[in-house]
Image 1: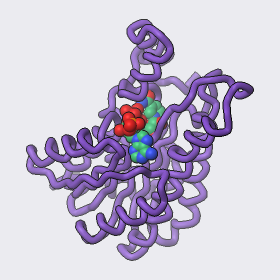
Image 2 (image 1 turned 90 degrees about the horizontal axis):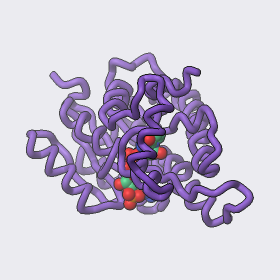
Image 3 (image 1 turned 180 degrees about the horizontal axis):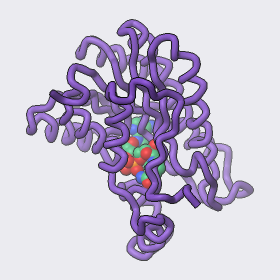
Image 4 (image 1 turned 30 degrees about the vertical axis):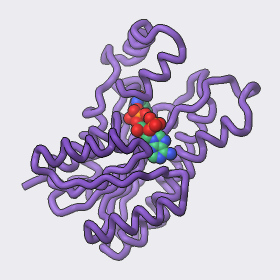
Length: 255
Ligand code: NAP
């Protein structure tokens, strides 16, 4: 018996990194998974990987910053899978790394469109299916950068702080519908997002060493460290958990 047997789950940004690891774990534990992403080839490969291990998944191309696309894809997923029980709002970008006084409005809006409005659009269009099903679980990827600050990527911090509170508002709003909403706050996790960010800064190996040292456990995390937390929040093991912040950060924010 899988931990999420019989549930249907949508994972946004499911082609790479944390989203991919989450799609694989959810499928491994019995969920039917809609892998969605702007990256088509990588997204389809995740579905093939799931099918190779007898799991059930389908890919949909989806840009979470486009509300019409979100509405259309969620409708298709619900028809194909018979409903939506779990939504993992994972798609995110780090955006331009400049101090606030040098940022343009476009650079600010680019990050908000994906990290903040994307969560809004996906939540908005998943809720009616969850209400119809009598409940559901929404898992929003915030960050340690939504709890504490650092002198870098200002729009990213703003967006992840917003996601932290959007989570609590929706948790209260939809508790009576038995829809749970929680945020996950990863420390630095070794994914293409972090590798590309370090590449933009200069030396990736040196950058990784510096990131390792920021975590009391002595190293950055792996996508599965986060996927296991997401799996818990998706499953009924967390049936009394809503509006909470699951921090998985190797001790980063414990200082
Ligand atoms: P990742 O490796 O970059 O993977 C994210 C995926 O989302 C990529 O395939 C990306 O495509 C896709 N994506 C970007 N914009 C999208 C859009 N508008 N619509 C749909 N998909 C889109 O990222 P990750 O490191 O796994 O991060 C996943 C989530 O965890 C993000 O919300 C991130 O902020 C959060 N997080 C990550 C870390 C970390 O250290 N990795 C720490 C804290 C929080 P492209 O590659 O084409 O952009």
